[in-house]
Amino acid sequence: MTTLAPSLSGERSRPDALPFRPLTGTSGGHRQTLLGFWCRRHLAFGQEAERIVVDAGDDVHILLRASWQAGPREARPALLIVHGLGGADAASYVAATGLLAFAQGWHVVRMNMRGAGESIDLCARLYHAGLDADVRAAVHALARVVPRVALLGFSLGGNQALLALGRAGDTLPQGLLGAAAVSPPADLALCAAAIDEPGNRIYQRYFMTSLRESYAERQRRLPDLYAPGRERGLRSVREYDEAITAPYNGFADAAEYYAASSAGPHLQAITRPALVLAAEDDPLVPGPSVARWPLPASGVVVREMTPTGGHVGFVGRTRAPGRFWAAERVMRFFTGLRESS
Image 1 (cartoon, one colour):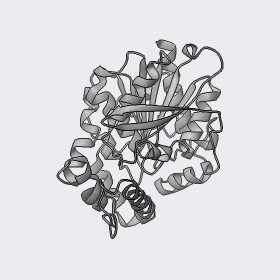
Image 2 (image 1 turned 45 degrees about the vertical axis):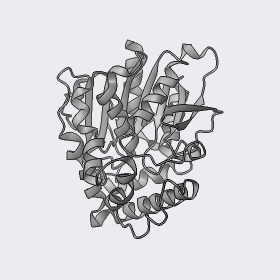
Image 3 (image 1 turned 90 degrees about the vertical axis):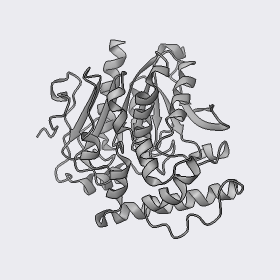
Image 4 (image 1 turned 120 degrees about the vertical axis):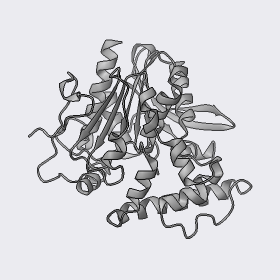
C-alpha cells in the first residue's frame, strides 16, 4: 500500500521519491507521534565525537558534536543535524538519522542550540524558533572544514533551517548542498494554538514541564538577565512565549514573535535545494500550517505531505534505525544532491 500523497510540488514524479508505508495498524497522528518516541527511546548515536565550539556572535557560543569518517575530511560531505524544542544532540530522532547517515559515509555533526544540552555551559541564554543566525554560524564553521555540507532540522530546528535559507540564503557558503526540514512549525501561531487543543494535553504537559525547568535553570545561571519566577503558573506554550520568549528576545508579544519567526512566509525566497517533509495528521504542526505557503516557481523547494506520520513519527517500513522512515527519505534527498554536485 503506497501512502504518499500527491504534494503541492509534484513530488510523486521525482526519481528520489520514497513512499511512506506505515506498519499495519500504526496510522494516525497521535499513534505515529507516540510510536516514534517509543521505537527510538533507546537509540544512542554512540560514535566518537569531537567537540566544536562555534562563536555565533553577540557573546553566543554553541556546541557541535562532530563524528568524522576515517580518511581525509574533505573527501566526505557533512550532515549538520539540528534538534527540536526541548531536545539536544542526544535526541533519539537525531541518533536515528545520524546512525543512518554515518553508515552511508557522511560525517555527522549534531548541533545543540544555544542553552540546549551541554551548550548551556557555554551560553545559558534562551533559544527560540527564529534564531536562524545560530544555524548559519554552524554551517559556516563546518564549511571551513569540509567542502560540502547538508543541513537537516527537526520540528523547531526545521523552522530555523528553512529561515536560514529563506532570510539569508545568499550569505550561506557555496558548499551548502541544501536543507531538509521534518515536521517544521512553519506557522508558529497555528502550531501554538494546536498544542493548546484539549486532545494535545499530553504534549502540552511535556513541553511545559521542559520549558519551566529550562527557564528556571537559566535564571539560576543568569540571575541578572532572567527574573525569578516568571515561569510559575504558565500553562501553555503561548503563555510561555508571551511571558518569557517574546520579552527576552525583543518582541512586543507572542503574536509578534510568531509573525517574525515563522519560516512559512520565507519559503518562496529560498534559492537552494530544500525538502519540507510533514504529515497531514501531525497533532502539533497542522497540515495547513505547512501546506499553505507558496513555493518558488523554480521548483527548488520540494514539499511532501504524507497522509499519516504524526509529529516526527513516520514509523514505517524502512532501513533506518528505530523504524524512522523520515531519516531514510531525507538521506535519499541529500544523496541525490551530493551526486549531482
